[in-house]
Length: 426
Image 1: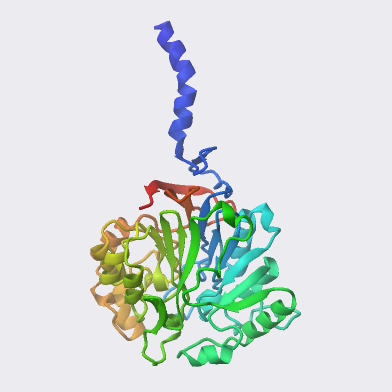
Image 2 (image 1 turned 135 degrees about the vertical axis):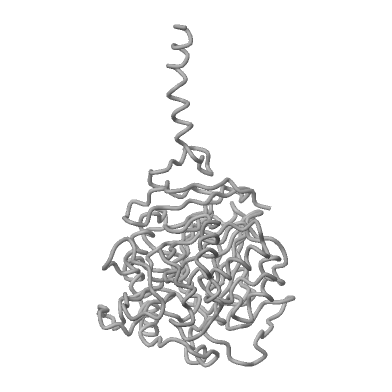
């Protein structure tokens, strides 16, 4: 009996340690635990961070050699008169989204980056992706543009290169679409930033050399990005095809779409070019195979994530960045699962009530919301993998496996709430 107690005394601490650990980091040098701050990126890994401010999209990537990239920085004020009830700002009321995004990025930014972002890609010209310059509460920088969204982020974490769908001729870019946002302040910002040393380019359809590794590319030949779509045009069969046949898409359909490849791991981000545009299904056919993960297109609003597209891509993970009661849209989640039963849906926010069934009364139109009963809503949201928080996809060196982390978004400590994985890249 004494021998058993002695052995238990030796073994118990180790059992407790391993029991408390939910996941080994991709580098296998340490363990991640629930309740602790997520560890920093490590050389050779690929981190994809979905930052939750509750006021727009912001995607932050750390590539295998430490090259950094941000896609979008949405920022809009609270509105009691919003057409769709909005979630609370994160981490608490009164915070500005670009400040929340900047604090997050600075926390995880590799030291070698010297406090700068290598690439910023603006997917398209909507305020939940670029910020709103018309809000009277904005501070105007000494350089003449409103400190909001992309522009506010730049003042806190400068970019080395900006890529959008319009540079340098924004009049021509806006003429290609209907219902584009006013971007006068954005023009001023780009002009100032370029004069201050930032380079700028138009997103090049079909390019594989626009977002390249900057620090040690020869060490990671299995990494690349592929630019697929912009302005409603798709790189299809080795040439640019106009999916709108000369007609004007709405601004969502002009979104920049690109695929990140690292070994067997593939990640797709496509702004707001979902199934309610002409882009989603042809893009899925052009990719033509399963992928590991994607950003939810157009926040998984109505008409997005068509069954046909999802049956081709079959993403293991979809992360939805959203901020109002109609996203993620229950019928869009259902078509996702019909086409791809294996898909795990992670949402940065979920409105606490089912208001989608009141779509007819609230918006004056019905996108299927009237059919979303409380029971259907409860069943769909119960099937989701997470409802609230920053979400991080962390890919191990070489891309063979990846994990999904959900982080607490109620403060600036970035503590782990949930760990899923490892998942195998195919």
